[in-house]
Length: 92
Image 1 (tube, rainbow, N blue to C red):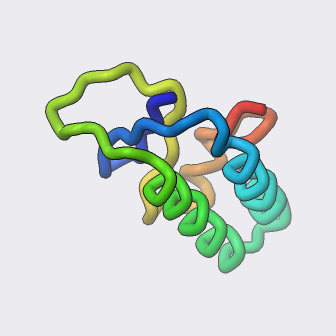
Image 2: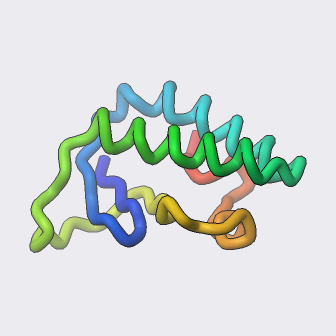
């Protein structure tokens, strides 16, 4: 799966990693619902860090369609709320 982190680029990520990513996504969703800004910042950083760690960056000139788009590290709680689907940032 191709994942885009806004402002950074694209990463190729094996589907097997989505179990771990979904746990972080669920935690992020709970923090957003409760308005926990500090927890939101921490978990968003952990989610983006996990994608970077587990994925393989694509070259900057690659134009692959992204199957998943994640917010930039500095995105606000309000900006991420606008990106959410019913199940969070990550499907499943």
